[in-house]
Image (cartoon, rainbow, N blue to C red; front, top):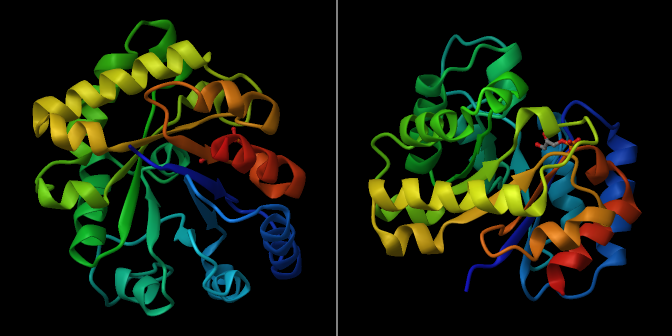
Length: 253
Ligand code: 13P
């Protein structure tokens, strides 16, 4: 049985104080987690202090929102895998559509980052998803196939147990438009087939695939009820205690 992951991607939001009180509020609002790993993904600056607020709570982790593909050296403004490891960061979101769209991250760059994370025991949450134009043109599956195949290039079968995938249709991010549970489940099923063709059914069956794009407490239950949806990557609603707690509760049901 695959466990769920509920990850909150704060993007470039919150202050130090707001972040700490948000995490305290969420942790106070949930009980022991039986079926779910909860991940907080604040901006780099706050990772360490959020880790301290979590205080080793079981099944709760932190994730970075990005990571350099370089080892170390003269790369002004970048953050390396060893720095993330140094502060006890277990996960990193890679290939988010905002990184692809605004910072020119190609599938090749995303793949370098995925490999670098895995080589250093950081679990990548690899994001894929089509734009509205691609969706309208019926290109969803071909775009996803290319992003998954290239993003996982040279990832060994053994390392696949540390990889998490996230399907985030770009047109559903921050727009209030959500893919229907059936449509999202269908794409997740296709992602599983792509991964099966790249590896085998054991890898594809154990892969956790998260859905992202306007997930909130009011729609999370129906999304998480779908067979191929193993959690959510949440943006806006992860900044509100009640919303994020509600999403976590629907995962625990
Ligand atoms: P929203 O939940 O705000 O649509 O953002 C989704 C997202 O991009 C999470 O990574």
